Amino acid sequence: MADNGITPRERDYSQWYLDVISSAELCDYSPVKGSMVLRPHGFAVWDLMKGELDQRFKDTGHVNAYFPLLIPVSFLSKEAEHVEGFAKECAVVTHHRLRAAAGGGVEPDPTARLEEPLVIRPTSETIIWHMYGKWIQSHRDLPILINQWANVVRWEMKTRPFLRTAEFLWQEGHTAHATADEAVEETKKMLGVYADFAENVMACPVIPGVKSASERFAGAVDTMCIEAMMQNGWALQAGTSHFLGQNFAKAFDVTFTGDSGVREYVWATSWGVSTRLVGAVIMTHSDDTGLVLPPMLAPVQVVITPIWKGEAEKAGVVAFADKVAKALKGLRVKVDARDQLKPGAKYFEWERKGVPLRLEIGPRDVAQNSVFAAPRTGGGKFGIPVDDNLKATVEAKLADIQGVLLQRAKERLAARTFRVDSYAEFKEKIEGGGFFLVNWCDDAANEATIKEETKATIRCYPLDGQAPTGPCFYSGRPATHVALFARAY
Image (cartoon, rainbow, N blue to C red; front, side, top):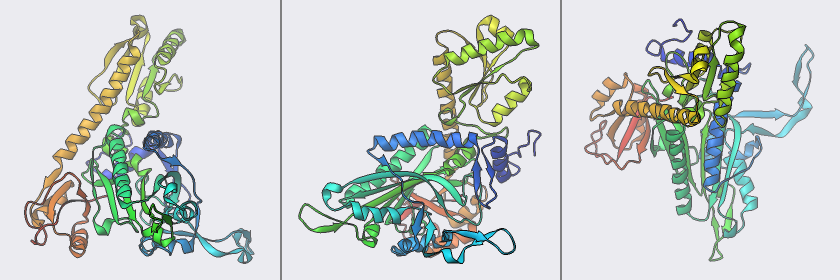
C-alpha cells in the first residue's frame, strides 16, 4: 500500500478498487453480509446519475411509478425461464411477526406463517405484468411506458461494492406495446439512451451489442447491452435492454383487443441500470491518488481552499473565497475554510474524493484578484482572473476535464481491443486483459468450455455491422457472428 493508503493499481487492482472507495468515503459494509451502506458522497454520485437518466427517460415519453417490494412466490413460477434464472438468488419472507424466544432474543412466531411465501423482488416483471393485466383491455391502452426507481435483492455469494451486492439500487423500465416492431424499437431506443448517458455523462465509451443465448436475461427473447472496458482490461456490463416478446403477456394472460376486434397478446420490453455504474466510473477514471470523477457526476465540481497564515490574513482570504463561490453560483461549489486542517491535508482529502477542479486562494491571489486552479486530471496549475468571465472560464475548464477523461477512456478502449483469429492466440493474450473480437460459430457448449478454460465470456455480438471474415476461431466451422470476448465483473 502506498503512503496515501491506496494500493497501486499495477500491484493489486482489486485492492486498489476497494482502497479508492474507502478513501473517498463512497460506501461502507453493512452488518448484513454482501450489503453496503451508501455514504453521502457515494449516494450523491448515484443521485446525479439518477437525475440525468430520469430526465432522459421523461424526454422519451416515459413516466415513473412504483410497485411493491414483496412478490408472491407463485408469480415467479408463471414464467419458466424467469423462475429458473432467479430462483437461486431469491430472499423469501415466510412470517409476518416475531415473538420473544425462550432463550432470549426473538424468533419467527409459528402462528404468523404466511399462507403464501413472498419473494423480495429480484426484478419486477412478474408483479408489473400482473398489474398490466388489470390495466390493458384494448389497443387504446397501449403503449404503457413506465419506469421504476427502486431497490432489489439478489442473494449473491461473492460480492464487491457497487459491482455485485445482495441489495442494490436501480431503475427498471417496463413497457407494453401493440406490436413486436414497436417493442423492438423501444428496446433499441433505450439501449441508445444508456449508451449516450455512458459516453456523455460518465465519460465512458461503450460497445453496444446483443447478448448470446447463454447470457440472455431470463425470460427474454433478446437482450441488448452496453459493455465498458475498465482500466485493467476487464469488461463491465453497464446497462441492458430486453425484448421480452409475448412471454410475460402469455404467462399473465395480458391481452388487448386490436383494430380487427381479435384478442392479441401484448408485446413487452424491460431495461435497467444500477449502482454498478458508480463502480464503472471508479474503475474507468480513478488513479493511484484516489477517486477521479467526471465533472457531470461530481457532487463537488469545484472546491475552493483559502490559505492564510494567522488570523490577520484569514478574514480577507475567506471573504474573497466566498465572493468567488458566489460568482460560480449554479455550479456545485464547496469552500473549505476549516481551521483544523492545513492546506496540504485539504488538497489530499479533496483529491481522494475526486473533485475535478481545486481553486487555491492566498493573500497574494486576493491582491491580484485571481485564483490558482489545479485540475484533478493533472497538467499543472494555472491562474484565473476573478472578473466577469470567471464562471465561463471555470465552466470551460470543467468541460475540458470531462473531455479529457472521455478521450483517455476511448484511447484505452482502442489500444486494448484486439482482433484474433485463433484460440491459441486468444488464450495467450487474455491473461493481459482486453476486448477480443473473434469470428464465432454460435455454440453454447463451446462457449461454456471457453469460459471454464479462460474465465472469459461472450460479452456481446457488437452492433457495429462487422461481419465474420473467416471460420470460427475455436471450432473452425463457418462463423455466424463476430463476438466480443472478455473477462468481466
